[in-house]
Image (cartoon, rainbow, N blue to C red; front, top):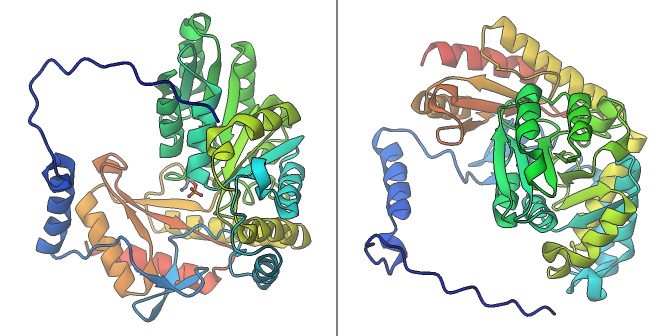
Length: 417
Ligand code: PMP
């Protein structure tokens, strides 16, 4: 066990600050309370923390009503799939509900290794490591691999988990404009020589806009500047590629050209946890040294079994990917025909409907829920005010009828705002 060195004594800030000794005094706590009461005052109901009962697939049950659901990432219907449910039941009977230790010490079960092997095969890499959370995987892995002599450059729309990992690392952090290869190239031309390691961070499918990066160009840039590339495949694993292998399969690139393929098990893969796929050398290093793995409990056997069963089921039933694509294309085509602003989304199940005003977006989500459609509003400050939107996650479970009804209702309610 490493003993952490004490932090250096930090000089108190030069400006005078008012002491705050209770949570209620924090400005940000007051600001949140004001925001929540303002919503009530203007008659919009809070769209957050709605209790969803039952299995969330094409529908969910909110307040006793079955509604069409577009607000979760069960992209290929594996959560709630009978084969996955049976695998989970078997795992809990065999291994109990917790491994009760770090895997490094005595929490490693056969199901962890089987899942990591299955992930390596799906991604086409030498090995894989799985950790207990998708968000925390990015934080702990990025935070661990780079440090103060290094540079991290990330897409401006990168997920919070990537930003938090960069901050934790202490590396110099620079965002580049979304998907802008030329800007990244210019940035690295200027900065590369000043740093030891350079890590480029992008995503497989961007979760607010549903667009994808031109991966071959990113690979060329990283080679040109002797940088490393990490791709967060949270929304592309089990979604893109002929077998659901993600964006690497989609572009048929050599998987060893990307150092770190990270992602989450919580979306298409029906579990809860994160992974990093890559070389055997990388995975061994991460398994022995990453704080969020070494000093944390191993993934529950049920979660590992769920994602393992989902990967196996996807192998048995690759047609779900075709259905997912058909559903996404149908939604997008109907939305475009209705004149809805769907931004830059491409052939992915993440489809924004840009409203351009947070209050109107909130009202629209309220009205749609009243008409039996559950979809998340994405408001300022999560996106700029003029890009406030509803964000639809299409799944392979949705029917043509559900999609047609949704786009027609959306079009009508949008016009009536
Ligand atoms: N990365 C991206 C791009 C995500 O969208 C998310 C979750 N929405 C995560 C990481 C975190 O994954 P998890 O929710 O499984 O912790």
